Length: 399
Picture 1: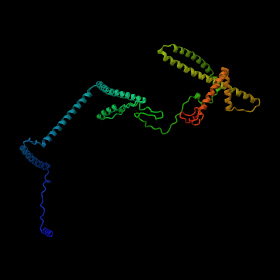
Picture 2 (picture 1 turned 180 degrees about the vertical axis):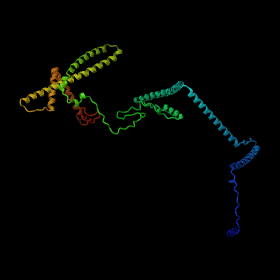
Picture 3 (picture 1 turned 60 degrees about the horizontal axis):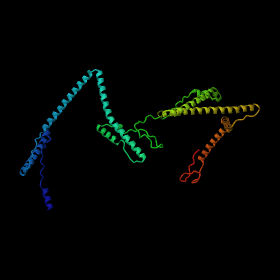
Picture 4 (picture 1 turned 30 degrees about the horizontal axis):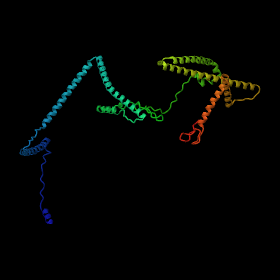
């Protein structure tokens, strides 16, 4: 069966395809093509509507009617709106030109007054807006400080100091389309270190300098040539003491006057009313501080003079021995130290007697003993007060 059918089809002549005239490309109007489609769509839509209306009438429901729509109406409305907008722009341009002409004709004094009034009103608005935000910031900062104090005392309370104000400002800035750097709260507490071993905290609002010093430039240090070793040479202690021999007498006079002033200040402090007590106390402390400085300078000058006299006496004796035929002899540092210490105790004995020498020696002995106790090693867990309370070994301190 299959073979017979195939032979029949081969024997038949296949007619050539009919040529279809393509008139769509010959027409230049695209409106007719789309109009036919719209007409066909409208016909199908009308048919559906009519069938639907018949069904609705049969069922007894409301009837729906199609609106009359026209393309030309929309085009006309668009043209009218464009023409209206063009007319509005022309009117705005005319008004702008008139205002410019009026401003050019006005004198400069009136323009300056107008600008000043506008700037003052803008400042008032900005100040009024910033005052409300600053009050909120202060309130939140106070709350944060109270929370920190309570936390230090042991009360667990945590408050976010700038959550409310920052969120409100962020929302306002987002609506205005601006980003401000002042959204963060004040950095009064942020720059404080939690510990003295922590690194130094700096504000992020302070811009880092772009200048980097690659090569260190030597800066000359200017000194007074009167006290420079280059111009003045080595200082002669004897010549200096002889030139300024009037200073010790002046210091003694100042010391006596300060002593009398201190006595008067103490008397006024005891007899003054309660309201004047802090001022009198501050005045008395100031006089005591000055008195201590003058006494220290006077004692230092006396010691230097005593040491110079002792060393000068030793050199004079050595010079006399050399003249008699003795060989050269140079003092060692240890011998110099012993000689100065001996002269110190001799001066103490001359001023205060043997009791002053005993007091000085006892004070020196206690000082050395305390230093030895601090540097003394202790066995772990041993007695003598050297170990810790847990029984461990105490660390040896450096001397």
